[in-house]
Length: 326
Image: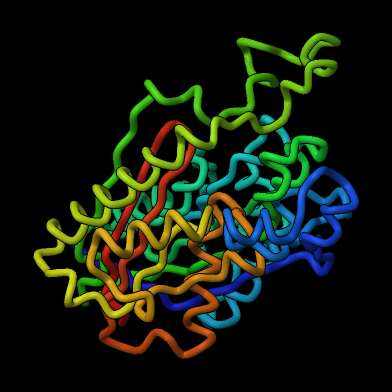
C-alpha cells in the first residue's frame, strides 16, 4: 500500500463582489443582520456564463503550476460540485477537456458542502492502492445560479469559487484519519427540489421557483453543529491523536456561529481556526479547499503540522479528515 501527499494548491475567485450593502438594495435585509447572524460581509459572483468547469480550470492551473506537473501527468480528476455545468457530461470531463489532460479518468462527486472531503478521501484511496500516481481534486461551485435573489433567508449566504489540490504518491503517511457519514432523513432541510427525475423542469417548477435552494435554517443549524462535532471527533479518534495535537482547524465556512459552537465543543481556541467566511460566504464544496489554500498562502501551515478539516452539507452529510502536512 502507498500513501499520498498534497504537492500543489490553487484557487480561483470571480472578480465581482456582492457586498451586504449591495444586498440591502435587493432584498429586505441589512449589513448588521447578515453580519450578526452569519459573519458574512461579502461574496464573489461569477457574472459570465462560464460554469463550474471554468472556475475549476483556473484553480487547477495554479495547483498544477505549484506541483510542477503537466496536465498530461494527471491520471485522475475528481470534481466535487452541486452546480455542474449541466446534468451530464460530468464537470470533471469538461475540466479534463479544458486542461487537455488526456491521460486522466474524470468524474464528479455530489456531496454538497462535504464534497471536497469526500473527493479528497476517494483520491487518497485510488493512490494508496497503486492504481494511480497523480490526482487532481477540485471543489467548484457557481451557487449564484441556484439562489433565489428575492429570498432573503438564503440569498445572503452563498457565493462562487473554486479550489484545487494535486496529490501524488508518497511513502509518508499524510492522511492520518477520516470520517464520513450520511443521514437522508434530514434531506428536506436543504435541497433544490426540481431539475431531477422526480420534478423535471416544467412551467410549474419554474413558476414556483423550485430550481433554487430551499433551506430550513433554524432546524439545520443545530444538526449541523452536532454533525460537525461528531465528524471531527471521529476523525481525530481514527488518527489516534488528541485535540491538543491539532495545529490548524479548517472548517466548512457556512456560518461563523456554527464554527464558534464547534470550536467551543472541541475545546479548540479560535486562534487555531482558519476563517474566511466574511470574504466569501458559503461556497459549498469549494469553501474548505479555498480555506486550505489561503491558510497555506498566509503561512498558517508548515511542514509537520496536523490539520483538521471538517464539513457538513445537504443530504445531510458530514465529512472530516486529519492531514499531516508533508
